[in-house]
Structure formats: structure tokens, C-alpha cells
Length: 292
Image 1 (cartoon, rainbow, N blue to C red):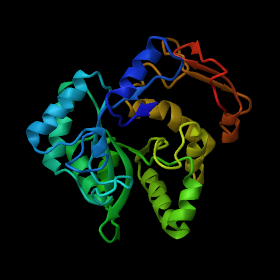
Image 2 (image 1 turned 90 degrees about the vertical axis):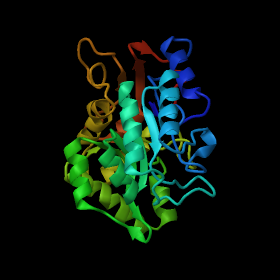
Image 3 (image 1 turned 90 degrees about the horizontal axis):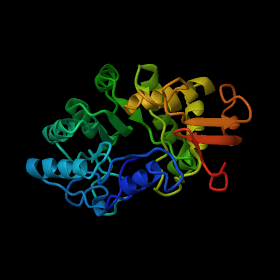
């Protein structure tokens, strides 16, 4: 599980308790406090920064707290009342470059939340590792740039659409035609060689933590086969997150992160709902704590 923003180091502490086997659970990659502008998206998590020195200091604090990656809010977001609109960039290209440079000093990848095209462009130019959402929003509607999509593919930047388990309901609330346009953009990026990264955006309204399969079904909706989706969620995700050296495959010397199900998910994703066994790092999780 990749956690892309918390307050007070909660996810890091949980990660360590699970790793020490004090609690059952998944391997966690924790980003800690996300960087944002003054009054910016998710400012309430404590990551407001302004200026180069404040940016460097925030990255250092996160790194010293033991995070696995750095999260930066390159644009506004939908859940922050009074914050910048989702299409608006919160940092310049130069500021995002400082984030990436400082993160690299500590060997940490950078995930950029970016709905707006201006923020996407800045994130690509800065050399981030993943772009979350990537919905191509401009002030007056969608603003898709083919040159940026080509650059994302060429640089190997993974795009996490963060498809909520409630993506079907989102389409109804957002408007079927507009939602289809957004969904088509993700299909279009994949066709042009952009690596997609499954995720749920869990924690925001209607995005629950215990229905990853519904988020995977989104990729089936945009035209991927079940086998391709299983690759996205295993080997592909491990590569995108920089952990493919020890997980994402069933092979000698790997962590033995294993999901056993009834049925064949390579032909029918619904089989993923029939869970028989979960191993995390070779250790079985308590079935009383597991939910299908």
C-alpha cells in the first residue's frame, strides 16, 4: 500500500509496526506530510511551504522522519475548501525541480498530485517519478497536450489515475459525457505508451480502503484485459514504485507477497473477490481481520 499523505507521521508509524509484526497488514510505502503552497491543497496536513529554502527544509524533515517517498501537490485539489482550483498550479517548474533534487539527495522518489495541465507540465519538466490523477484540466475545460504525453512516456513517468472504487458513481455525479471524456484520456495515454499505476484515492469521499478490486475494474472499463490489469497491479506497480527488486513477482528470493483466490483472475477479475489466503512478506494475515 502506498500512502500519499498523512499528518504527524501516522503512516510511517503504522508501517513500522506492521514491519515489526506488532500488527498484521501490508507493506506500506509512506510519503509523510505532502508539500503544498500556503493555504494550498491539503494544507491542513501541515506541509505548507513557500520559497526554495522552505521547500528544501520540508523535504529534509520528511526524509529524516523515515518516509519512503516525497509527495508534492503540484496543483489544487477538490477537497480543500478555499484552496486553489484543481486546474491551478501551486509551484513553478523551478520549485518542483528543487523538490526533486532535494529528494534525490536522500534517494527518494517524488509523486506529484497534478490535475491541471500547467502543473503536469511543471512536474514532467522537474522529473518527478509519478503523476497522480493527471486529468489535464485547464481554466476553461480539458487541455490535453500531445507533447507532454510523449514526454511522460519517454521519461518513464508512471501515471496513477487514482480511480476511486466508486468510479461508476463518480461518472453519474460528474456527468456521463464529461466522465467518459476523462476516462478516454486515460485509455489514450496508455495507447501512447504511458505506464499506468493502479490506486484508489482512498480517504476522500466515497473512496473506501477495502475495495481495490472495483478500482481495478476501472481499467477493464477503459479496454485493458484482466491479464493486463493483473500485470499492472503486480509487476507494473512494483516497477513504477521502485520496489521490483524484491516484490511483484513469484520468484525465489522475493518477499512472498501472495494473494491466493478461487478462480482465474487472468480471465475474470471477479475471482479477486474470492480470497483464500493473503501472505505479506511470507506471513499469513489473520483471516478474521481480512475483508473480501
